[in-house]
Amino acid sequence: MIFSETIRDIAEKAEAALASRFAEIDRISYLNTQKVMDAFREHRVSETMFNPTSGYGYNDRGREVLDEIWADVMNAEAAFVRHNIVNGTQALTIGLFGLLRPGDILFSIAGKPYDTLDEVIGNVGEPGNGSLRDFGVEYRQADLSAEGAFDTQKIRQVLTEEGSRVKVVFIQRSKGYLNRKTLSVDQIGAVIPLVKELCPHAFVVVDNCYGEFTETREPTAVGADMIIGSLIKNPGGGMAETGGYIAGTRRAVELASYRLTSVGCGLEVGATLGQNKNMYKGLFYAPHTTAQALKTACFAAYVFGEEGLGYQVEPRWNEPRYDIIQTVITGTPEGLCAFCRGIQAGSPIDSYVTPEPWEMPGYSDPVIMAAGAFTQGASIELSADGPLRPPYTAFFQGGLTYESGKIGILSAAEEMLRTKQ
Image (cartoon, rainbow, N blue to C red; front, side, top):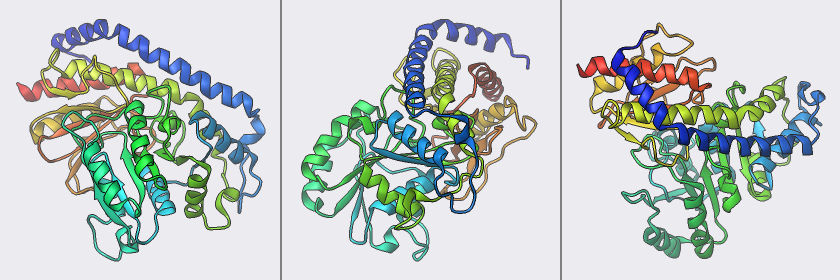
């Protein structure tokens, strides 16, 4: 691809400015890689653990050891990772249905969860479809402040008035489709003692999607009872072709495992069908691949921000990052579509395809999505999407390598530059 002098000049300035940021990202990647490799050695991973099982999958040593490694890496008491979890939404559904019972309250303290959870919770959709609301689970919400802080007054009020019924306090770490800041592990860790003081029986559940390995700790290290995520995002390292994970306290993971399979079976069953190797390999690559995505996001923030093309971005290139998502407020439907067209054109797969908005299942607005990925829907690969609603924000993430991510960003910048002209 040939880029204009304007775009090449912005790119050159971006990389000069980002040198120290890239060095910090590499430092975090090294520490997380060390943690993963220590767990592999501790659990004596061998090639035999890649062997497939079928049927019930009894005594699948590869599956069992991978769960133990995952728990160690996430600093959790227990964990499970499975290739047959189809996406992050299903992983979250398994966790929430595993913990909640009729009459309980699900209390989200980081604002509205991701759009695809609306029907799971029962905030939208037809009654009788099997949502949490259909099973008698009620929902409460506390929004974050304009600065992205927890509303401790509202949290205290709800937990004081209804604490006996609050079973799950839910925190979405990433911004989802909201124009808000991503939460750090420290922020999450600071609010958990308040929750436990007022509601000691409640499970603190964190939607950890997009945040894994962006810091040297995960929310389970600061008191979260359960964290949940998808393998086609950060922790699959671009190698896992599908799957999800849940990690946390032994009791929380046990209850989720009964929803994954059945009460009485839990984690004792589940054929791996030859997918173990991809999941082991993905976890091995995950810290490095996440670092590549973070570098791509920083580069995008500079190119599209006030130092480059002049759009409003979050976070800015020199601000801390706690997930791999970069937002660019394009301001118009055409701007959002142009951004996605540029990302698609700069992708390795289906670069000739022109993305168009469509009524995507689970979303309340038409969504445009650029995803020229080796694995369908893999957010750790170069991708961008956004709902067609004001202020027409493009949500960008991924990049298996910084080099390919840079090319995709420059492609999007050229398309946006043409749109502005």
